[in-house]
Length: 349
Image (cartoon, rainbow, N blue to C red; front, side, top):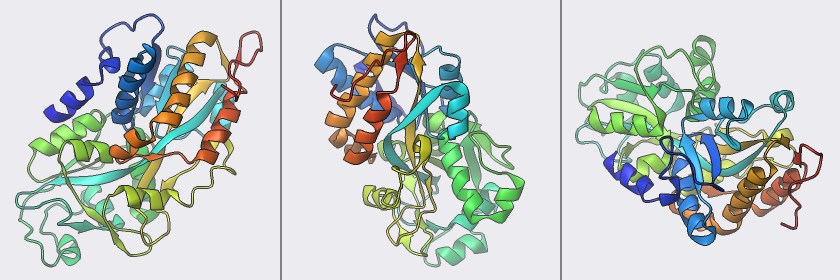
């Protein structure tokens, strides 16, 4: 956790997060913790290039949705895409910024990243509280050569409204009928067992401190905190590791062009190389903005990020959006208007 805080603190443009007032001209946003590492990296580079900062509150997707609906920030951020009818009801547009993977992470003595394999049904049974120890026969069957201790499993989950939870539980409802009927899929659910932690940061911290723990975090948090990751068995029955290539494979079949409001889910995707728990992260913006100047600055920031931030994203194991999708996103931006009905962005921008 200390390492993560140092990395994020290095992004000076985000130093004002949550506790300080943003400087005049800075961009305000709030929401998902999933993309926080890349937004921090982009913000630092953008501040150096333009002297415009980003005041982003990493409060979880549920909080980001609430804040943009209440019009208290220029943009909201969520890993759970809103359905077209919800966008229309709240006068919002949404667009994806990057894609990534959610990975199961553990803290088991003697176990290193990649040592253990898990499948969806077994993961669901752990989170349902049915599998209570690491040497359970179901886990041993998947890992016959692993030295699994007779240690209690400490389940860790998100306590806040979380898009990462939405992605994780969306996967579980596809692989477990029991999970679908008993718990379901949302940014917040009634967890059968476990302890809650706030944000990807909080889950990463808890996993690092508690032996026997299992949790789920966005890949960048696992990487930056040196957490022990598990391999997974995907929809095609193949064992895959949480790599950028596996996340890219999961995203390969995404049909952005024919998805109203860019509503695309990337869990349990087919393909021998596909990582099973993947998703995009989204920005929410009002279609008619009260502060046109602030909204313009936000769109300039994301336009810059699409053009200049791909390597920064891949360095953190995120997948940049394909060029045709970015072109479609910018056409959507051209529909955003000020209170007088004037477009605030032109595609040539």
